[in-house]
Length: 314
Ligand SMILES: C[S@@+](CC[C@H](N)C(=O)[O-])C[C@H]1O[C@@H](n2cnc3c(N)ncnc32)[C@H](O)[C@@H]1O
Image (cartoon, rainbow, N blue to C red; front, side):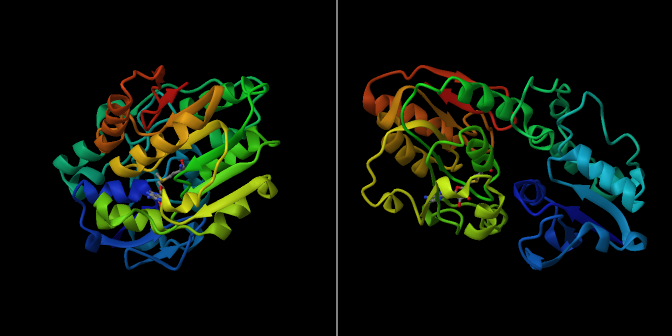
């Protein structure tokens, strides 16, 4: 009998950082696997999950509704499903999961599932261009992005994202600003050495490819790819931007990103700084603080109550 983990991204990394040993996992499950293995364990499609062997399925991905439905279709009993991202409904999804506490222990359960994870159901954004499934990932972040994009009609400049990973947020920007060029910056090899990312965090972020990112974008012809480590990957680029998403998790690249992009944001444009409020990624807020200090100014900014704790600079 084994423990299976649904998801091979940041959520899975959180699980190991909280203290679960990777050796206790039998295999990972992912609907869109990037490879056959993750952290040296096999990655199965949901339909390949051996039901009889599954003692506990820890669901680390955010699409809790869709995954819950899929589990029901596959006949995985609710008692065996532990949802870590309980973030889109005002209810505790895990009341039926009776085995988790015994298997994982109370301390780990408390770390994995702090009570504040339960937040209200979103009303569907009126006339949204984003599919409901996407909005379900982080409603506040995406609904805010959509509202900001509606204000950009007369603001000049391209869009950009520094820190693309699997292209989830880039896809939303590309969908909402179909006429704009979009620069996508990522090493596609995870974090630079000086970031000192843990092994599982690094593994979770190398688990992507340029091809997979391009394949999910609605308007890939608008993309200008900038692979490689930032800021070297800029290659002397001079551009003006109406919207920039800065999402690189650690201090140095966040600071470099602010230094490059902030002076190039057009009047009326926005820079979205992801994870500013994340207790796990304190380098992001520190980079903004140091950037303001080195420029002797306070940038007008509004914090969001989204999952990562974004800050909107404008
Ligand atoms: C949290 S992920 C981005 C997630 C994405 N914005 C989203 O919302 O779907 C962070 C990404 O930043 C990239 N990254 C971090 N430091 C970098 C650097 N110095 N140069 C290029 N990419 C970097 C990593 O490779 C990783 O894919």
